[in-house]
Image (cartoon, rainbow, N blue to C red; front, side, top):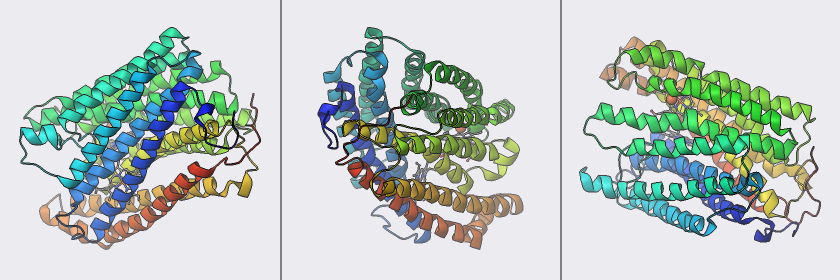
Amino acid sequence: MNNGVLDSNNLNGGQKLAVKYFSVAVILFVAQILFGLVTALQYIIPELFFEVLDFSVARTVHINALVIWLLFGFMGAVYWLLEDEAGVETVGLKLGNLAFWVFTLAVTIVVLVYLFVQVGPGDDTTRWLINEGREYIEAPRWADIGIVICILVFFYNAAATFMKGSWSGISGVLILDLVALAGLYLAGMFYTTNISVDQFWWWWVIHLWVEATWEVLVGCIMAWGLIKLLGVRRQIVTTWLYIEVALMFGSGILGLGHHYFWIGTPEYWFTIGGFFSALEPIPLVAMVVHALYDSGVHKFKAANHPAMAWLIAHTFGNFFGAGVFGFMHTLPQINLYTHGTQWSASHGHLSFFGAYATIVIAVFYIAVQQWRGGVWMSGDLPGNGWKWKWSLALLNIGVLGMTMAMLVAGYEQSFIERAIEGSTWSGYFAAQMHPWFIQGMNWRMVFGIVTAAGTVLLVWDLLTIGKGEKRTRQEVS
Ligand code: HEM
Ligand code: HEM
Ligand SMILES: [Fe+2]
């Protein structure tokens, strides 16, 4: 152990690979924020970067970078806990390293093509080389195939390591979940000329990722994290994990129907989607109760305070962003008015940040602690840990502020454009010019800058926390 300095000798094989994934994840997170600022500014100054970096392109980079940095974070998290959970060395690390570099190179090329080529003629060459045109997973076909291969390698490494070592409740759920998560990606690769059919399958990836398989994945990370950070008994977290997974799949799979209201699918989806998606907040409440209960039982004595704080932020963010803000517009009677307004974007920000960015950041802190030699990261840090506390505050206040600004704008759109003007073209413009909309967009910008400040501080903190620290991590039991 080499305390206080970043030294890869402090890491096991899987963890060495994990920190590579985390490093790329952080870079993409910063890119996501920069492009978010550009798109927000384009709402205020529409001619900004016109025909140089159009809104559509900046937005593509913003949301695809988001999905990819979270995937990198998840893959890193799995490599991080693999040896520890399986009790043996990671299998297939050489191949895993190769897959990491291929994946990273593919992502870099795709981003450069988005930025410099931007659009194509809209035929097969565009689909293969530039952009597949499916929001959030827009990577062109060649990169799709590359991604599938890299994910297969990742999956093999994870499954083979557990096969060689020992299985646990957490790893069993994790591996089954990864089968579903990776398999679903294929649903976004079908090609049909019928837009309804295309959307039908595309939603399988997006919805069944964020509202089913990703939730289960972060449930596994959470379970493992609580054992490590608080010393919670394994039986307790595993029991919770099973209950949450059952509830999540029970509601999330048919909850998919809330995206089938207006894309040309049969009407029975109104009932199915409305009913099952309305049940989705239940497992999310369970997760808040679970984490707070465990923290309380262990008197909030944690081995890594920043990570624990971000785990708690995750449970609340998941509950409010996905549960409450999702529930608000999930009944067809309400969605008729809110569909595709800033209301959706409001929910999209709070849920992606609250449910996923938060927990990946928690894992970053767990990684940095070990990377520096398993140093002290509980209370009583130099400078009272102001950097992690301020970045936690700025990021959460920033995203919450953006969420509220968009909610006001979305409410106004639903009211003026849909309810009063009956979804007409002139109604659309009336809503866009209303002071509440304009102010909402301005406030989103302001809170976007707060979010960006929090991000800068986060990166700085991750690079410096634990530097020169000689105390070892707090024991928990
Ligand atoms: C962490 C989990 C979740 C994430 C990351 C998430 C994210 C998103 C995003 C980004 C969109 C916009 C999609 C688009 O571009 O059209 C969306 C739409 C939607 N979400 Fe979620 N969501 C989550 C959970 C939920 C839950 C639990 C519910 C319901 C209880 C829900 C209900 C909806 C509905 C109804 C829409 C469609 C909005 C519209 O018609 O415009 N979401 N979600
Ligand atoms: C500096 C901070 C940020 C700013 C200024 C910003 C701004 C924006 C803007 C202007 C859009 C386009 C909305 C539209 O199409 O009308 C957008 C979309 C989106 N952003 Fe951000 N964003 C920021 C940070 C984030 C973060 C931290 C997350 C999640 C972790 C996120 C997730 C999303 C998602 C999921 C969408 C698509 C939403 C939808 O279409 O429903 N953004 N963002
Ligand atoms: Fe959904």
